[in-house]
Image 1 (spheres, rainbow, N blue to C red):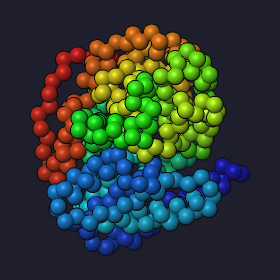
Image 2: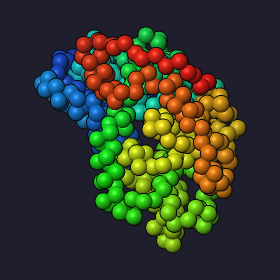
Image 3: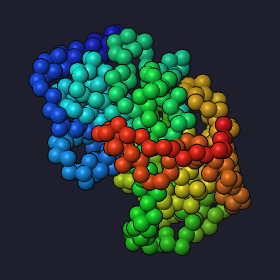
Length: 400
């Protein structure tokens, strides 16, 4: 019965959006309208912020519409979100550019009208965990009824990725040809490669947390487990007492949990001066720039951190089950540019040992970023507006 009700709900939403698009596509396309739409954030951040700022800097007379609304958990919130998606469907039908950074349902309900381009600025760098059409044989895949109703990831006019090694995986994930996937970079990484910004970030954080100035900063930034926002969790045991005892008072641990995680680690008050939850801090780029070492698992944050040429440790205790549930585009064991451990105790031992393969990190970055010049946003906007692609540098080393 629950499955039938869920299917009815899906079909109702789908037909509402399809009808909205059918009605509103009779309106003229507004040639200067640029829409930014996401369910990931309520604010203009990351790739969206970078592209918007670049378009504004050029003063081209565009009108901007921001559909920035997290998908809610409550039933009332989800009903309200249906009306939000109906508005998004209207904006799609009348926009010149409709820019998204993840899965976005209104894009898939109907064929696009001529004159509108959907631009996919995927939120993650590199190609790591499988998704989209790449997981149809996995439990992570959408169910069959859903896939019969909607063609996920359809209608993308252009997709921008970090490097040439990502083209084939993204074509597979989106069920599209490689010709419309462009390895021009990821806009938000421009900040990471801006030395002036790096200095400002350090001073900003040191002003806020002056005790960090002479300490070693460890950033823990894992991804979630589960099939989405309603089931997201993180179950790795974190021994904060041992961290403090073994690494001493001059090492700080910053926790940056995935925003979907419903059971974030609880930091006891006794450790709050050294174990600090930064999940709500608005920009993970800042935390990466100040961190000396990254601890993660299957998060695509490894690609950005590799650009900074700093060491990583991979804390995973469920690798085989994760492979069965979702899997990776490349063999995990040879792919990640750092030691793989299964316990937090092993992480502490690696930090104390301090022996990391910096050459492997450099090779990793070269493989997954065609450009490393801090000009990704400019390249993407140039290509979006004028269809120009610069010559790419050549890196000779590959990792996987």
